[in-house]
Length: 274
Image 1 (tube, helix red, strand yellow):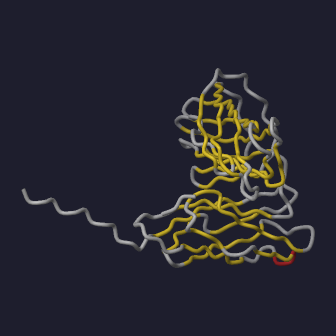
Image 2 (cartoon, one colour; image 1 turned 180 degrees about the horizontal axis):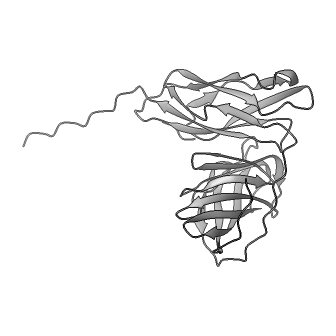
Image 3 (tube, rainbow, N blue to C red; image 1 turned 60 degrees about the vertical axis):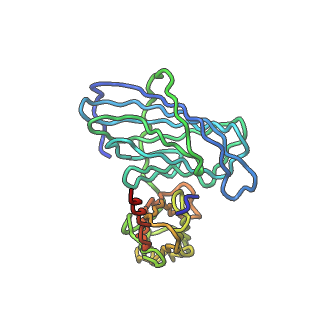
């Protein structure tokens, strides 16, 4: 296998966690020879005892080549759930979270800030597997800063992407279908929905972009997912992101695919007689 809101209550207990992340070198998609190198500071303020709410600010400093369009991904290690976010297209599937800024850029030496609010139960440890454009991250925890204020969410004036189901299984050498539509009627003609693999098994791929006329925004359209034949006996997985290409600030959909492998595992050799 190849791996290429309801209002928040007054805080009862307040804590802050900061994790500074040095992103390992990787190539920026679509930019030949450009290497991703950056530092991410993740700061949270939480409240509650056995559960509650929290806010997180993420600052991405570019210490490498120019980044044109970027996506931050990480996995919640506990029961955390994303409520809403700002300054990026936020989505969560299972524990995987993605913040996408497809029309944004970060010049060398500059930084970009995004953030979100969420809930937690039991504990709220920081994520440890940050990645920017697929480049994995190493994490260190500096002293805790003062908590940051919580921005109020604003109503979305534009449609977002809806997918069903959010998790599918595709047989190796075959295909499966998810269905896509918009959350509301757009205020203009045609809407284009593009999808891309964020991370995971490169044997998993998808069909072409989808086009939605304004008067058929609520009609489900099929998007085919393919799983190529390979020589291993491992089920591959991948995470995909679907977005409205004309509206870089609109809601996105994050969904996952698992390949059901059809190769038999290689049996272990029998022990030699003594």
